Amino acid sequence: MNSLGEKYLRKSSLPTLFCPGCGNGTILNAMVRVADKMGLENFSFVSGIGCSSWIPVFINSDVLHTLHGRAIPVATGLKMAQPNKHVVVFSGDGDCLGIGGNHFIHAARRNIDITVVMINNYIYGMTGGQVAPTTPHHVTTKTTPYGNPESPFDACVLASAAGATFVARQTTAYPAQLQKCIEQAIQHKGFSYIEVITQCPTQAGRNIFGSGDPTFLYNELKRRAVINPNQPIQGNEFHIGIILERDDKEVFKPMTVGEE
Amino acid sequence: MDSNNVRIIHGNEACVEGAILAGCRLFAGYPITPASEVAEIMANRLPQEKGTFLQMEDELASINALIGASWGGLKAMTATSGPGFSLMQEGIGYAVVSETPCVILDVMRGGPSTGQPTSSAQQDVYQARYGTHGDYEAIVLTPSSAQEALDLTIRAFNLSELFLTPVIVLSDAIIGHTRERVEIPVKVDIVNRQLPLDGVEYVPFDADKTKRWIPYRANFGMGHHIVVDGQLHDGYGNRVGHIPGKSAALVQRLCAKIKDNIDLITDIELRETEDAEVVLVSYGSTSRPALRAMKEARKLGQKVGWVKMKTLFPFPEKELAALSQHVRTFIVPEMNMGKIVNEVARVTKKQTISVPKIGGELHSPDEILKVIQEVL
Image (cartoon, rainbow over the protein chains, first blue to last red):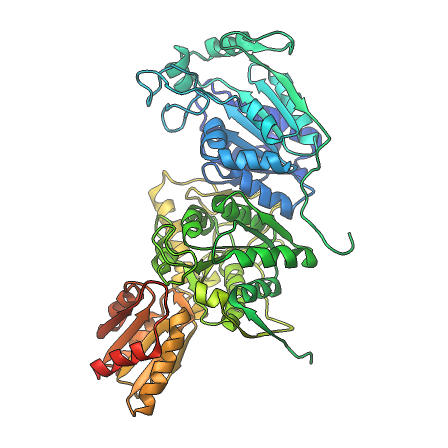
């Protein structure tokens, strides 16, 4: 095992349950490298339900693997109890924007000092490939056999509008940038959010991209990712990088009375 | 010795004072009639105690915030009523299976659905016991006065910390809004979760019968690197849902943790039951007119007794079965269509008469006395 893996992974929970070619391993890798730099003892992790919510379970730290959609309120309570910890949430697109969407916008509004890493694979992967709030219009999934009649969320626009103070988009196709961005998000004071667009060979590959080949999907994400913020995006392209960073909004802290 | 502070307060405020005395330092809730005063008073009181008040976006968030706070080491509570209690069931199940201590106050109102927001009822008793899915045992306490609202909220925290499980305080609109004399104790006995022993390997989700099936509990940040999961798990928290024996073992231990320790939990009050032929079995606000009816019957020379259950679940089977040795008839007044009466019938195997009342009004003593006269 890689020496960082040896040091930071929870061996009793290995092997991971990720499919071959899944991007979640890349995100786990990035998180472990950030924790190595910032000190794993300074972290607590919370996640919901879905493939990507397993990411922190494999880190040998304090981890709450919670209910579908509820990671953010659990993280809110935990942060109140342990204000000096970096509380990092891993959540999928269905977990964060579907069943947990209300919690997501309210945590952003509060500007509570937690970090949410939302892994977007465009589909409900663990349950077998059903349409998600991020699935592109018209594509077929298991529950949209005649094409998706709905439009997807732009999660970064949503987070910005709801009041998040650090908003970024990254992709597993650029792991070094991803790692750097996770660190920046954690260092940010206030609600920080990263959407990580990832390849899902088993479900999104088959259902949406027309191929389950991880190399094809990886190259496809690389092709779609636009780094230059001034370059307009076309078709299924997306911008990556920090989209919003502001320090003009007070970070949530509970009210106190009497002496500080 | 300091004397206790006596105040005239309503049951909702009494719950807050009890919670703070018990060590509650985080409240997360969402406004709902008739429980909103609990949040309002908590918002005022907790900052004075260096605690945290959170008004969350809904009841789902509220119960889940307790779970995070509890693992962070805080004693935490929420308060709600019927519709909100329904939303919390998912989180209560997670708290059960992850062995997360926390306290949920349900100030019952009439249902189903939005129902009767401002009227009282006892219709949530089965939801409190069976509301979340899967096999589990619930601890449910039922105060019948503002004083008991305070006392039982303290007890709820203590039981929760002892057994590492959510505890439900089932109050109702009458108890929540009735102002009466409450003695606020200066000092109370506090139970805290038992921290792991030094020098012994810590297995966060395992305990055998000699430990009453209750594990030690480290909080996050103590260096134990705990993984907490709602999936069925082994002693180390790793998922075992695909292993039948280990999955069954967890559910069996979680149930045994409550059932095998029922004597540490049960709290019922008996009056005039020694020679009674007829016994009124009651809980919560209906125990008040029931007590009066019993006294009136005694004045008439009738052999009538009275039972008040302060712990509704685990159901006090042993105590009621003992009464059935000499009691001919049990009468169960409830502000619902007849629920706990089924439990009483199951346990006592004697004639059991339901006195249901819905619509929002409490039984009058005369209504209960009339039923006594019919069966004597």
